Image 1 (cartoon, rainbow, N blue to C red):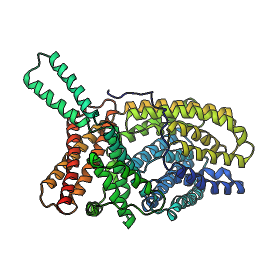
Image 2: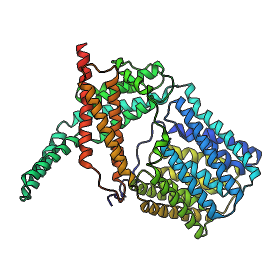
Image 3: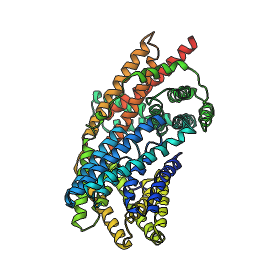
Image 4: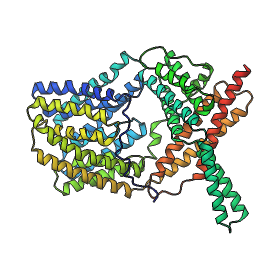
Length: 578
C-alpha cells in the first residue's frame, strides 16, 4: 500500500483558465433558448430532455474547430444513446434496483469511453448525470422518440453555439495552445537562469548524504558500494532535470502538438504555429542558448487575429509531415488498461445507489452520480475528488437554501436562476472542483423543480444523505478494486521511451538521415517521456501496487532528455555547416 490520502492542498484554488468564460457563456447560450421556449409553452417539465442536448456545449473548447465539430457530434451521439437506454429502461420497469443497476453499467461505459477517447472535461460526469436522472423519470415507450428528438434538437443548437466563434477566430485554439507552450518554455528557461546553482547544490547535498550512509554501513562489500554509488549517480543526474517547470513545459509542448497535429487541412497559419512550437521544443533541450523574452514576445503576438510571428528552420516541419502521414492510433486500444477503472465505476455506482435505496432516499441517482464523479486516474486523486465533492455539495445546499425563495417567485425566476448557476459552475470549476460544485449543486436541485415546486427541506436532506453515501461507498469500492494495470502502463511507457531513444540515437549517428526523420524521432521521444512521467505519477497514487522500477525510470528519463538535447545540438551544427 503506497498511496497517501492528502488533505492539505485539496481545496487550494488554482488559477482560472485563460478561456474560462468560453464554456461558461457557451452553455448559457445553449441552454437559454430551449428553456425559454419551453417556459413560453408552459412545458418546463420537458426541460430535462433539452438540457441533455444543451449540456454538450461544455465539451471540446480547447480543440481546433474541425476536430471540435467531430468531437461534439460524437458527444451528442453518446449523450442521446445513453439517454435513450435510460428512457427505454424507465418505460419497461419500475424496479428501482434494476434501474440503479442499469445506471451503474451506463456510468462505467461512459467513463471508459470518455477516458479512452480523451474527450476532456467535464468527461463522463455530465453524461452520467443525464442518463441517471432519466432512469427515474416517468416514461412510456411511446414518449421516448419525442423526448430524444428534443435532445437532438437542443444538441444541434449547442453544436452551432460552440462552432460559431470559429467565424471570427478560426485558429483560436491552435494559437492558444502554441502560446501556452511558448510561455511554459520561457518559464523553464528563466527558472534555469535564476537558479544556476540549484542543480549543483542538490548534487552536493545528495553526495554528502550518500557518503555518510556508506561510512555508517561498514559491513557492505566493495561491489555493493560500487553498485550503490552508480545508482545514486544515475538518480542525481536524472532528477536534476525533472523540475516542476520542466514537466509543465514538456506537457504544454506536447499539448500544443496534439492540437496542431489533429487531422485536417494544414493552412499556412498552422504551419507558422508549428514552427513556433518547434522553437519551444528546442528551448527545453537547450535552455542556456534561448532568449525567454523572445518566446514571451511570440506568445503575446498570438493574441487576437494578427499575423503569426515567423520562426526560422522551416525544414523541421518535414518531421510534422511524416507524423501526419502515419495512421492514427485507434482509441479502442486504450479500453483494456481502463478495465479496472470501469469496474470501480460500475461497482461503486451500483453500491451507492443500493445504499441510498436502503436508506429510503427518493432519488438514488444522486448517490450514483456522486460515486461516478469520484473516479480519477488513481486512488489518491479519487480521494481528493471525494473531499472536493463533499465540501462543494455541503456549501452548495446552503446556497440553494438561500436562493430557493427567489426561484419560487415564478417559473421565469426558476429558469433564470438555473442559467446563472450554469454560468457560475463553468466559470469557477477550473479553479477547483469544489468551487464549481457550489453552483452545480443548487442548479441540480432547481432542475428537479422544473416539473413542479418541491419542499426545500426534503430536497436538502436527500441531497446531503446521497452526497455522503455516494462519496463513502464510491471510495470504498475504489479501494476494493485494485488496479495493477497501472504498473503495466509504466512498463509499456518505459519500453516506448527506450525504443524511441534508441531510434533517435541511431539517426544521430547516421551521417545522412532521411529528411525530417530526426525531427519526427525527437517528437516521438518527447511524447514518450511525457507519457512515462504521467504513467509513473498515476501508478504512484495507487494502492496495493507492485514496486515500480524506479531505477529504470530514472535512467530512461535521464538518457531520454540528454538525447533530446543532442538532437538540438546536431541540428544547429548542420545549420552552421550549411
